[in-house]
Image 1: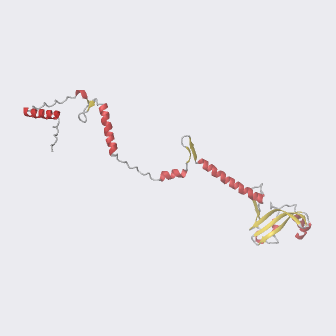
Image 2: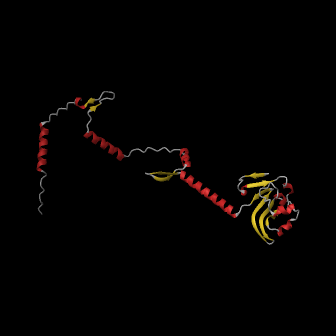
Image 3: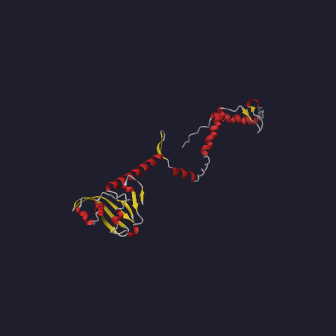
Length: 245
């Protein structure tokens, strides 16, 4: 059974045969790996030649070419198999490593693939952060740049609005307003007057003025006292005399 995730990339696929899982051990793991349905197995390798000629795996050291060896084993859960290029009985060059966990075979990524994946992940995260930051940026010619966050709008909506207390006017304001109203009334006197509420306004010219009271008759004695007071005020206070010692 083979599960393909990315058919063009062996790092994205895995392979497992459930019938082999109960009998996997150090001696049978290479036979399990050499199954024809395994996409990681190269059928032109020296292991296939040794298998067809019914020779032991010790003869791989005398051959030149691609071969598979068991590099590490931790029964029954973990096995590591290496693919290598043998150039001489003492000289080999590793090509790839495969690890088997609970019967499932994966290819171990190389250093270049790991760095490339981490760089792509970091770049994707940075790009997503910049795109999200740009979505909150606002600009207006009169205001400039500022940040506008969605959660700030929700908090402002849910936040109870405090009622503003109406402050009473000060004494200075009241006196100043009364003085301004009096000044305006003197400059622009009213043309119509409403004498009683509900009545039609009447022009000021048509209002009858009440006759002024006649001046009371002044007694002759009072006139003399007034004249004496006026003459005394005109002459001024008497001069002070110098005292003789």
